[in-house]
Amino acid sequence: MDKNKDIFGTAIKAFFKENDKTDIIVHSPDFDDDIIPVEYLFRNFDEMPKIEQEALRLCHGKVLDVGCGAGSHALYLQNKKDSQVKAIDTSKGAIEIVKKRGVENATYEDFFNIRNEKFDTVLMLMNGIGIVGQLKNLQHFFEHSKSLLNEDGNILLDSSDLIYLFDDEIIESEKYYGEFEFSISYKNQKADSFNWLYIDPNLLQEYARANNFHCEILRKGSNHDYLACLTIMK
Image (tube, one colour):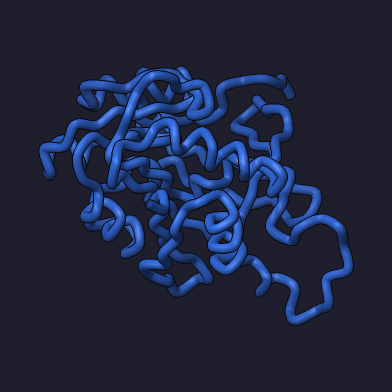
């Protein structure tokens, strides 16, 4: 398989242009292969989980949609809530389609490279906090987020507590149980592996307090997932 490919962009473009519904495959040394149905990336508001719907309702002011994928969240905010939205992703192919779908401000950009911009809402859905990769990077995430938020701004993110996967086993490891290594493939293309973080709500609140953020758990889902709101303490 060829590496360093824009897997999400390739799949998103194929679905948008040719209605190709080939799944994206997720690989991990810790689990059996899983799939991401590319069609799911194009879901409308009514097809979204309740946690995502609530997050979108709570967005206000100027919104940064981090890891926008095919642009479904940004489109809803732009068209239904008349919000000022900037959608970013590290997939060039995805951004191409997001623009074709009508998102007015969509850029190929890394969240951690944004400078000299301010937002009222930073939106990080589909386990958007995963981009942090590992717990050791959370302090940098909070520091950078402070530089992006307007006064009274907030971060809306969802994640999952994966402790249930261990069936009450005692976890004896220096590695946090929500830290994973993944790679993704599509047809004959495979990308290099990357770190991805799932964080339980109690630990997120602990890290938030340590970095002068308030963390409120707004909603819990049916699959060990939850929606959190982060605001800078005053």
